[in-house]
Image (cartoon, rainbow, N blue to C red; front, side, top):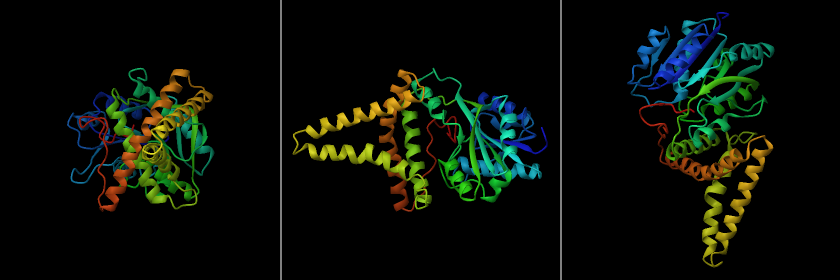
Amino acid sequence: MTGNVGAIAIGRNEGERLGACLRSLLEHADRVVYVDSGSTDGSQDLACKLGVAVVELDLSIPFTAARARNEGFAALRELMPELEYVQFVDGDCELRSGWMPAALEAMQSDDRLAAVCGRRRERFPKASRYNRLTDMEWDTPIGPAMSCGGDVLMRSAALAQVGGYDGSVIAGEEPELCFRLRARGWKIRRIDQEMTWHDAALTSFWPWWKRSVRAGHAAAEGAWMHGRSAERFNVRRVLRPLFWGLAFPVAALAMSWFMYGLSIGLALLVYALQWLRIRQRARNQGKSGSAASLLASFTLIGQFAMVIGIATFVLNTLRGRKTRIIEYKGAETGAHANG
């Protein structure tokens, strides 16, 4: 490498997935930092044996992925005073071999580019319908972007200028960071390049549901922080589930009393039309019929989960409380649960 590229992995109890993650980073970065959130599976020892610097988060302070990335970034800057680019990854991801050269080329072609992302793919998309849904979620358009995900190559100067991630945000910290970067005139871009393998390990409905609840909370918190901006950050992401997952079904039920149940039938018809609209949009994007149907079904189901996340944020805000991190992979793995 050039001596100015570092990498940061975050996680908890990722097991051998962490080993694969760190080995892939060591091949493409000059220094690697692993930030651990209280692992009990020997993750810290594994990282040390690989020659990776380890940062252990203070257990007395609530974990967030944003906080972990910030502490990793601080440690990396101490190790590398000339740090120019930093690759962030989650501990359940593995960097692809062609990613770093392509990402660096993109960075060096535009000095206002703050972040570069590529294609994150699920390693086992056929393991469950939920893994398949996650893999489709990562398939976003190429070109200028509004935000990035947890796996991203960032320009160190840009990240430092905006003060890093907001460590208090429990989910959706990447779009929030990108909002502040764009406000300072920085750009975000997705390039047509394979970036990482990811292992969501979603094998049942309940973890997927909790992941959707977390998405609702993230949307609400982002809108609360920046929704009054000119771009109305996250406002549509909040209004959409509030309509489809709350206002519309409640209105249909309320009117059913004097419409003799007709409003419920009409509501089901409207949901069916919305399902067809989402499915057709997915088909237009090149997805197969089965994939489009799966995406349409769970997009609608997810609106109800997001309402719970939005309500959680609103109620805790009114009570003056901070929501603790919403984990969906279970206590034994994936503490940050960014995937």
